[in-house]
Length: 72
Image (cartoon, rainbow, N blue to C red; front, top):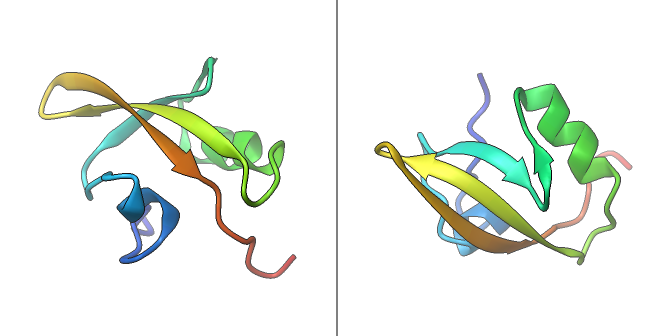
């Protein structure tokens, strides 16, 4: 299981921490890693999206500016 939060990456800058569980991207429910990846791919690098996540049983939201895709 790859770390979703890379130091200095978009999720790190948005305040996400390892162990946070992303439950929504904009209005779309995220039920798995592949769902999250496919939703991110519907956006362009530099787009701002709202992530809803759970940390320690509490729900929160943050805005993330998507980074460049690797291997694109």
